[in-house]
Every structure is written in C-alpha cells, then in structure tokens.
Image (tube, rainbow, N blue to C red; front, side):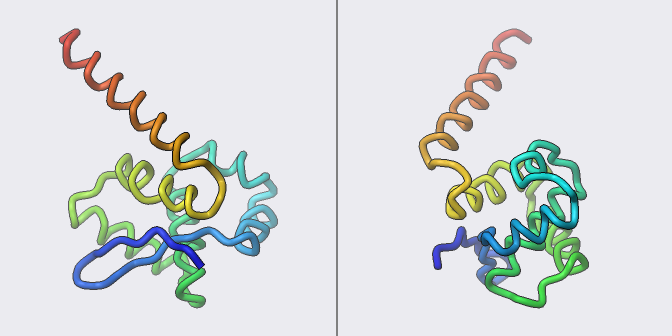
Length: 120
C-alpha cells in the first residue's frame, strides 16, 4: 500500500485514506467524501488526520489525531501547511486527485502570493 510519509520527531508518520475509512466518514457525517473535503475546518482536518493514519495504525483515534496536529504545529506547521503539504499529498496517494492537479493548485497559490506581495 502506498502512503504519503513524513518524518516527525524521529519517527515516520504514514498517511493514506482507504476506501473503507471513506465509507466510515460518510456514514458518520452524512456527507459524501468530496463534500466533506470542501469544508476544511479544524474538525475536518482532525478527522482526516485520524482516518489517514488508521491505515497504518489501526487503533489511531481522534485524541491521537489531536496530539498529532499539536505536534505538527510545534514542529512549525500551520493549519494551512498541514492541509496543503500533508492532507492534499495524502489525497493524491489515496487516489482522490492527480499529482498534476495538486501541482497546478500549488502553482496558483504561489502566483497569488507573488501578486499580493507586489501590490503592497
């Protein structure tokens, strides 16, 4: 099974959203998985972290996801970078988007940042 892997505080954390976990998310939230992704609140991010880590750690729960989030923040990540650098990459590995689509999204984001800097 493919994973998006990240080195964090001396250990490797693996992320992948399996089809089974997608069904669990849909049942729990009453939303399709794509509708669930469209609202990237902290609750959504923690839920995604929980289920993305369950594919390699079957007992990974919401408290573990919350602790992982806090550990990522302490390591210098922000909510934005957790979404763009971890969750989106894991969605590519999980088959929800193409690598080229993610690359294009990142390029647009960088262009917006450049434009914002030049207009100040």
